[in-house]
Image 1: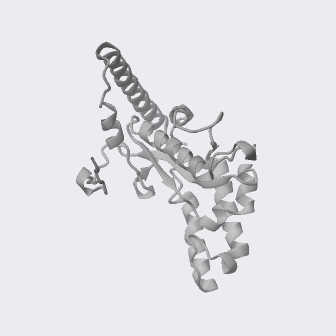
Image 2 (image 1 turned 30 degrees about the vertical axis):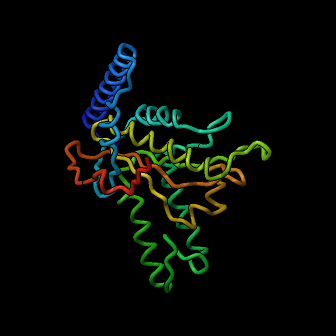
Image 3 (image 1 turned 180 degrees about the horizontal axis):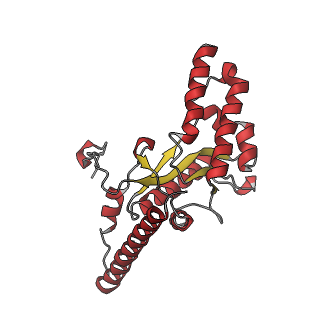
Length: 248
């Protein structure tokens, strides 16, 4: 448990971030209403979105109310049909450890036939080295994480009314992007989308753990942790670097 002052400090920062985002949203709505024009004020929010990796995580508990706000943002992603094609399973500390142990146990049984991690194959000694590092990550690399949110693409129940699977996967990715953008409004909040260890992620054991149906797909885990508020942003992105072709 993080010291009380750390938790209160993070919560205060979260409230400031939420208040700021609400203020800008209301100001944009008033401006759009009065001028009948669109607004580009959303662009700074998109630019602020970033993936913060595990080596930049710091101790500090993220409040569940922050996660609820991220999930609210996800709800407004576009999708076809009567219901959203995504399902999120929010794992707290105990459930995160359980999921990681499930991952290790899966590879203990299947490392020779599936490879491990990202499909690496090698000797038993090499596997045991990887396994030891992965087990240490439960309290090391992933120790500061407050929540892991399982990202599940949920297929529609009626085959005759289904959208293509790629559309449902794309909609789910949009929902995750919404969470990531909303996360940028909370100072000191660190998030990124991990694809996780592929064979374990796609295993029957993981499907059962997450309560998935036969055609659902787990697309990884959205990590939620704390980071320094003054973490430098070294990204350099320019529009001219994108593959864009205009045909007029």
